[in-house]
Length: 110
Image (tube, rainbow, N blue to C red; front, top):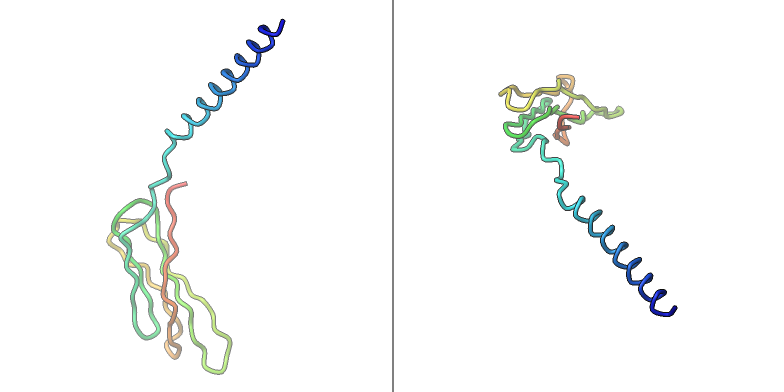
C-alpha cells in the first residue's frame, strides 16, 4: 500500500510539472507588441511645437503647454498623423504666448 501512495504522489508531481512546463512554454512564445511609433523628433520655437515619427507603425501628435502671462497656462495638441507620412503634427499657442514642454503623444495599432 505504501508503494501505491508513493507512486500516486510521484505521478501527481510529474503531472503538475508537465502542466507548469506547458504553461511556461506558452508564455515564452509570446512576443511583446513592437508595432509602435519610433524614430521620432520633437522641436519648435516661439509659440509653436512640432513632432514627426518616421519608423514603426501607428500615429503621433504634437503637444505643447502654453505660457499665459498673468493667466492660467493651457495645453494645445496638433493633428494626429500616420507614422511614415512625412507630415509634421503642429501644435501652436496664441501668438502672444510662448510654448514650452514640447512633446508628443503616440500609439500603435489597436
